[in-house]
Image (tube, rainbow, N blue to C red):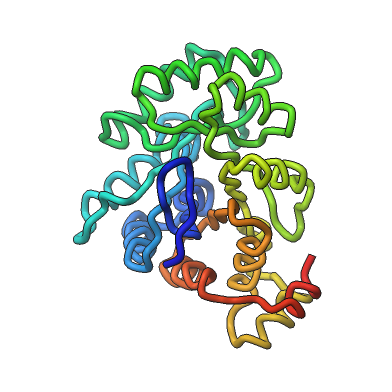
Length: 281
């Protein structure tokens, strides 16, 4: 497995997004555990989760608990696995998503995530989504305090614009290591954030890199054309396209089947030619 960097940590060039294993339409736990184990077997050492990846109001942290259970039951060495989680998003249980970026909530959310993951310090903790009712500086200040207290080892932001990225970097004293924004062939509007991360050497983690759960299976057009050339899936081509954008890009495709993440994990081995890239967005 090829590797890339988040802060001072080397991780697999492709990560595993845990959300599909815990929200609406999720599989049974046994299949999810097999999916996580398949990712580890394939060399994936970055797993992305969040306390908000759940359905019902009384199961906050469902995905974090699932990942902790899968890591504990894995037969191999998991010491190099970086689990990245997030706080600041909430799901009341009615299908909606809300936000709470208050420092008090972020502190409480981090403590709860620490317990669910069973660790003394979270490897990478990311502020999940800006709260329009809380100053950005206050929310990021809470992340800084968690970093200073040793509760988290590295800090990141998610769903942030360029100005917010720069402000977060300043507040964190240059210790911002990742930005997790939506980016895919069908959602290119985070290109400025990707470009800024490339310039600053900050890891850019595209979420929904294949276009989301509903669109991932239908990747066609130029991606299908290139896939036919190489005898691989359009999804693998899409992830290789992400990797070709910049050395700071680390896609985190969501998966709920072992077969899906095994295919995704092979993307770093696919070398796209100049002719291939000319066909793609």
